[in-house]
Length: 73
Image (tube, rainbow, N blue to C red):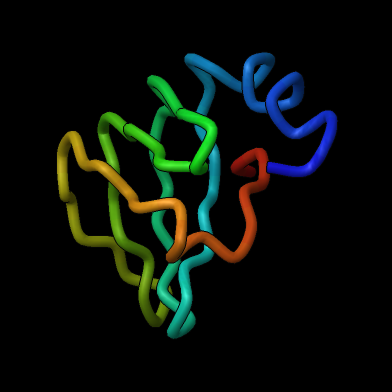
């Protein structure tokens, strides 16, 4: 994990984030936890595709699938 990433993610805990995954998929949810491999636990997660959302609930995202993480708007 790049330097400073852990600090930024720690500040994002409990807040909604947008995660872009390999293959172009996007998931939005509340960041509950993460580890040094960038594995993420998201609660109230939903997949965003073609301006439609699909509820997923609580999910684990493997860090090797993460392209970027951003505050959700």
